[in-house]
Length: 151
Picture 1 (tube, rainbow, N blue to C red):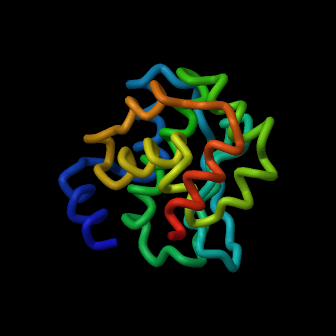
Picture 2 (picture 1 turned 120 degrees about the horizontal axis):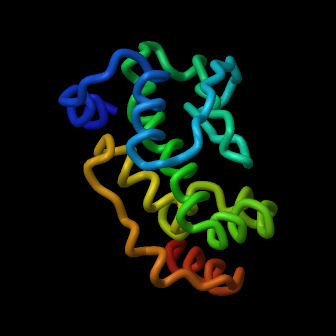
């Protein structure tokens, strides 16, 4: 978490809402509304499936500044929805059950999460967009990757 804050403290922002507005404008992504929620969950944020609302969870987050890398991460999913719609749809619509079951491994095997994690961790400085070049729409392929990680 400290690495997040060190990277993000170099950025200028007024609020998560203003940051999100600037990101949407800069990357030509439709505007996204922020809603603050309180859930007993480790998840700090999530994006609605249609990418119109970003939910920021106030339970595991103590300070507004902690939301900044989360905003970058979740925004990247909205960007992916716009610029890689077929991959976004495959992971989140077609294969929602599968996506939700891969748990901790999603940050190692799911192209959407690999790219969003890089973008969020660096507060927009880095991406892993090249992972989309190797996308294979096959559940068995990802199950094998997860199996390999477990061993």
